[in-house]
Length: 288
Image 1: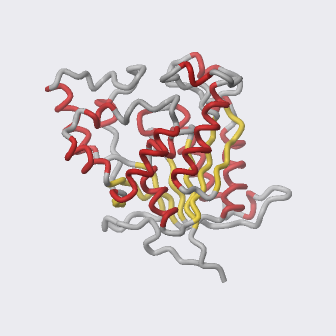
Image 2: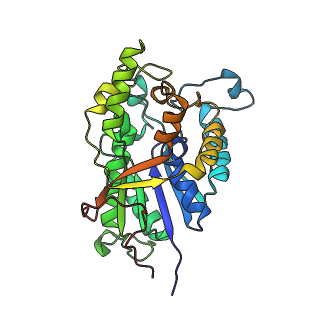
């Protein structure tokens, strides 16, 4: 009998694991959980904070793979699995049409790859993007759909292909979330200090007003206050993308900023939530 706890994060790009639920991943890794991350794309469509980062590398994708390895070490991950797709870029960008872009690939192919990895890694708990993709990124949305389908299909013997591991049923699926009450307050604060919340980020292509209207119910709150240094180290490892943290959080006074960052929240997609806010993603999980 195994008592091994396994947490699997399924994300679209290198850096999603750190900039997103990095505190949660670091916490469970420190507590002895085997934490694995699947990254669906190479991040090659991302912008670069410092063009000097490209020196000595053949592509941005190569840089981002190196950064991901450093971030994984900072978080204490047990394994990182990169899939062979290209970053699709933001909505409406020319990168959407690249033949290797994730959004150009059949959904069934991505689902099949995720099913095989779920059966191999045997996680009890899976984390992925919410259906809106956090801020509407096409890759995030597609990965959310594929991860949700793979979560259920991994247990289906009819979904097996030659050479696959035996069917396996994960127990819990969570979407990354954000307390929209907090975000709506931040939006109002940004207007007051003269910042435009409809055009933030390095490329001014993230609309906080639109995001604040997407409902992501909070069914789990994970205290990551003790692991913020690890999350920060992992975020800084993604040096080509790092800009000091989310700009909408940077407008907050330091004590409020730490309070917001010290808790990471999730929507429980499966099994249906009970109405009680969890403080442990493994609450109720049965070990083999």
